[in-house]
Length: 368
Image 1 (tube, helix red, strand yellow):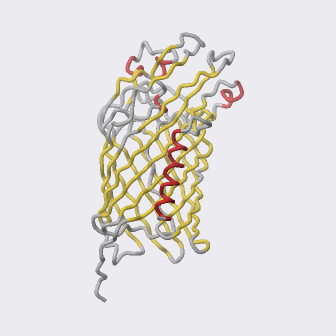
Image 2 (image 1 turned 60 degrees about the horizontal axis):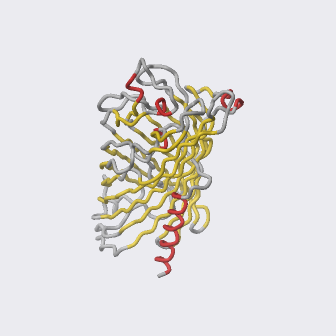
Image 3 (image 1 turned 90 degrees about the vertical axis):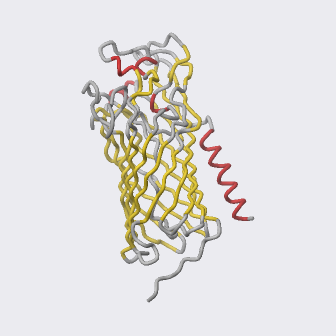
């Protein structure tokens, strides 16, 4: 009963975090919707056959500093014309192990985000705020350990593949004014705060670890393949009253690929407490792996140094990670080649809770 009450409390708190309309956090104008798995907690990495694991992760950040390529646009901050992009994401993932090597997980994200800019822009007027919230794009993925976990407890490599379903709204709307501070109307919100992208996607994943004495080295790579070209939702250019006459395809949103790379080390600190540090890279490529890359997107990537701390007790693990940005790059527009800009966060807060339950099947040990 104590474990049940703990899980119930965490779920209620996570839902309140994701859906609250109070001060939010964000991922900036670059659109990221996926979370790489957190490996490096002091608990065992493998999920036993027949077991279930509930993972709840919450992500928050505030993006208000503009970059064009890798150059900080200090004038936007000084003049007060910068975009403030805030976002919260709560991701619930339920995993089940069918064998010691093979497991399947289903992820359900909830999004609460906003995007604001002074309107009129010059001189800066009141901020016009666009909000998007609701269910995001649900995904399902299967993962398989290449080596037998019974005889390879100190190192292993896992590959995964699955589907992303277009369950989130890609045409969320709000009432806001144009860039001159007039023409208030119900319009599609900015691409970065849309809960979904309206594309069927393919998720590809690799993750691995190696124990070297007390040190636990880990890494993961996630890539979302989005073959759909555009989703026909009017882009922010239309929303703020500046549609492109020469490049009409930029007047609708692109459905871009996305990726996250992460590698680091973790060590036990004291009893059930562990610490880790990793390098994390998140981004949207200029061009998709498959299909065309038309429409409006903000390609680029951001690199973080990510310290973390974890605590394990019984079947539960709590982990907090605080990625700190060390490099930001806003790539040129893939359709026009023109330099654009995007806001990037300085810090990201990621909190996760994992709880394992269910009756584990007997695992025969290898003969000596």
